[in-house]
Structure formats: C-alpha cells, structure tokens
Image (cartoon, rainbow over all chains, first blue to last red; front, side, top):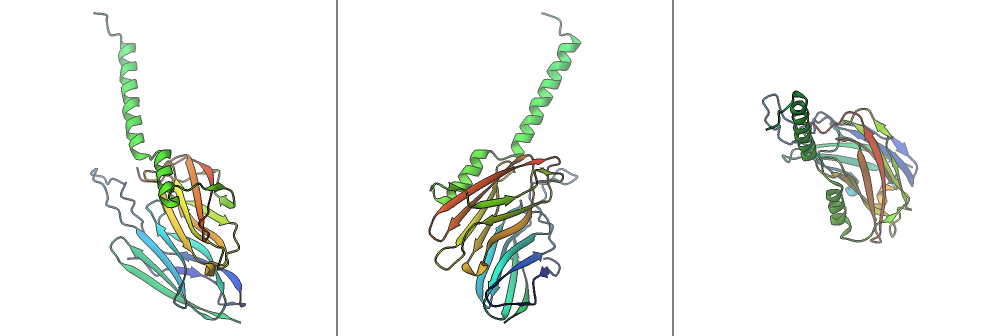
Length: 107
Length: 151
C-alpha cells in the first residue's frame, strides 16, 4: 500500500515524560473527487485509519477523510512511564495494513 | 419584436455562463449546515462550549492541497479528566469531515498536528470531547488562493 513509513521520536526518555511523535507515510490519498483526462471520476483510495499503541495499549488513533493531504503527516504526543515498543498502523480503504514499530528506553 | 442588440446578446451569454459556473462550484462545496450536521452527530446534539482549544492554521493558504493544521486542547490528560476525541470539520470542502483523533490519558497532551486539503476559503471547526462528556469548540477561517480538493 505505502512505502516504509517515516517516524521521528526520541530513543530515550525519562519516566513520566511526554514525548512528541511525528509520522509520515507515502500515500496518494485519492479523494474520489478528481476527474481524469477522459472526464471519468478517479475512484477514492485513501488511508482511513491510523493507530498508535504502546506495549499493546492504545495511545492515539485517527480516522482520516479525503481532506487529509496526500502523504499523511500525523504528529501527536505520548506519555511514557516504562520502556517498551510503539506500534504504528495505517489501514487503507481496501483493508491493506502497513505497520511499523519503534522501541524506546525509559529510565 | 425588439431587436436583440449585440450588447444584450453578449450580456445574456455572459450571464448564463456565470450561472452555469456557479452551479458547478456549488456542487463541489459543502454548506455550513452540512458541517453543523457532522458536528451534531459527534456531540449528539449537546452544546459545545467555546474555548479551551487553540487552532494553529495559516491565515492564507497559498496551496489548498496541503495546509498545516495544529490543534491543542487545554486538558490535564489524567485518567479521570482527559480529551477523548477531537473532531475537525471544514465547512467549505466537498464533504465537511476532515479527521477525528481519539486520545487516551497515555497521549499525555491533547496536541495533534496534520496537513489538510482545503477547497476554498472556509472555516475549520474543531470540537473536542472530554472524558466527562463535555464538548468544547473553536474555529478559524483560512483564505485559500488555489483550492486543493481536485474539484
């Protein structure tokens, strides 16, 4: 569905710290409103769901509509209390799933 | 019958072309009342209090295809008092819905950023829901020079 997503988050943090996580994924986010050269409507094809979990627990999720710009950029915060793994998931209209993980050391 | 002067014919032609163009444009745009309906679905009809939300959006968007948007909701984000949902709506896009964020106390801060598409000059309306079932709202207008919904 999409190329390997790009993430930016710290590798280490202090217990209780609120970190900022930046995510970027390549996707055309075809709105379904465009017409091609022949005048036919180009069908909608977007990423419609993003989720972020930490050690299996939900942190944040987002329902995306065609009004989110191509190559969706999503930035949010997360409070870390322990070391562990963030899991990021993107799902598109066809149910294709792109997922990636990142660990963080919390002391 | 009176003569249809060239001037009158030209004006008639221009007028109907203008009307046709407007018709097309209107097709591509939602109305503020559709945005209100989207918000009512989210709030279940409850009133949203103005405030607690800071919206960071440019005053003028040169390119409606990608406009940066940040929303910060003032909240302690504690287990018994946090922002659970943030709804973002645009009242002049083909469809009003833009995105809906769902947060947890693990979010730490009710602070989300993304990039959105804007079809034309319009208002971005943000509604936040708290774990206590309260709703807050704020809005900001963005002037768009080149629309970005592919319409």
